[in-house]
Length: 102
Image (cartoon, rainbow, N blue to C red; front, side, top):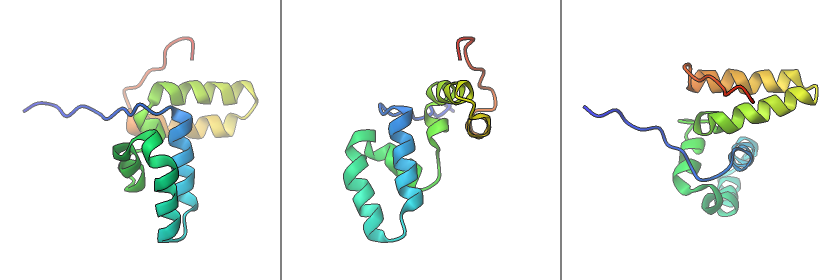
């Protein structure tokens, strides 16, 4: 049996985070429709559906970019936010080891 490949969208980590935030802030069906109109084509509808259904997180889709974003937050003194991203990366990719420059 072939191992299923993980899905990696073309979208950047920042774009995926924007979608996640729009979904998290949605309180009505119309809010979800608007988020789909605004972000669906930018991040890809498959990625949007993964985020919408909770099957994936931006960190799960783009662990390398997420680690770089977390490292930048640490440099800015935002250790708590960085640690949350690292936790989410490891939840999706327990074997993930960031490259030395991250």
